[in-house]
Image 1 (tube, rainbow, N blue to C red):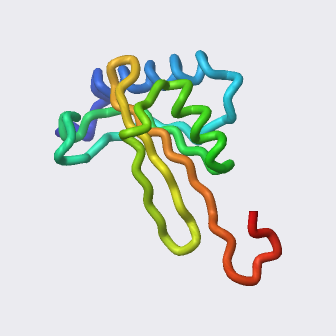
Image 2 (cartoon, rainbow, N blue to C red):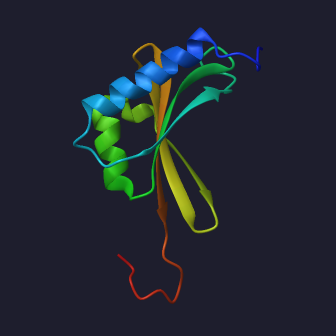
Image 3 (cartoon, rainbow, N blue to C red):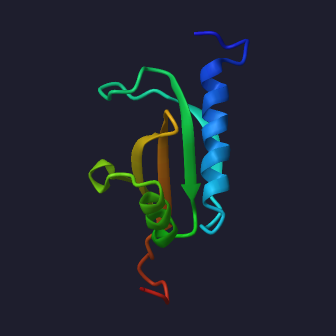
Length: 115
């Protein structure tokens, strides 16, 4: 794996990111990045370059992006650490892998707001 030079797959992922953000200016602003995906057991080539959109403004923003990118709800998985939780959905858009992740925090006992 070449780590010294920009590759065509990185450029393709950057182009996909630009296309996605340009097409969805009406949605909440994500933290956007081009990254390599290292997920064995998927149909992605190991180390494929793609796009990750992270949303830290709650699950409504996550769902808006998931729907806008037509990511299958069946690809959604979840994770947690402490009181932080997240959902992530995966797919392929513009020929590159994409992941949309939405982060949220659970209230702890004693918090005033339990909504």
